[in-house]
Image 1 (cartoon, each protein chain N blue to C red):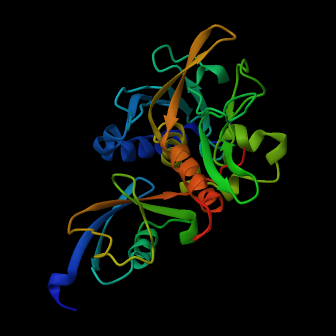
Image 2 (tube, each protein chain N blue to C red):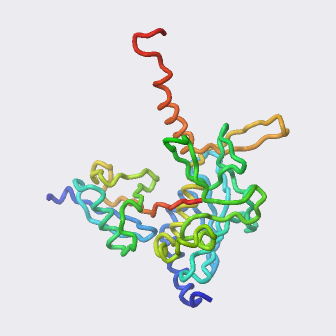
Length: 86
Length: 224
């Protein structure tokens, strides 16, 4: 792994920010799992979380960090998918 | 008292601090904290995508007894802070979408059988209902409702029942996808109504139209 492929993202997990060092070639799933783990979230199931850019575009967990267009220092958000019932 | 007020206050301070840490980002998306004085938080929601900005509602969040009990959430007028009737929240109906009570704070989706459907988070018996409530896990009114007694708050306590998640849901389903307004003139009764254009709905209608379109096209080589 060369250093130029490493980037650091700020992931805001349910309002708690955490810096995650990652590689542009790994899928976002890895970033999401680390962020959930390091912010000690009780909800571990990724399907219950939605990852988005700050602009609100939904990010797919299968997409590689680089392919998602994420740059070093960028902030992304993770929020619980609301269980709308009505 | 279900929770020692000192504990509730600590949790209030932590959640308000977390909100303020992201305040710049929240402001850009139309989420404005108007008041934060224990046990009350008032947050206004504005439409981030529409050229003319609307502020359809604010939310009053009461941290009393949090978090042995969930947060109490009431939609209020952003200026007067009075609770809003169901009819006083901007509806998200679209033309030809029949509802006795137009959906407000709702999620639209395409159902394979029923077509375009919605889940309303804001529930009320009719338009004049003085106490509409947010029907989502993590909100006190939801867990106190007879229909949800089997869904304990303790299953949702934590991130799902946090102020952040509730604010995010209100933003996502209440204002995020409103991109403008349509003026719909009605002959009977006289007058007009203002309906917000909901981007999510418009996209789904186009998607449904695209799915239906191939069946209406003449077969290749057939009559034109």
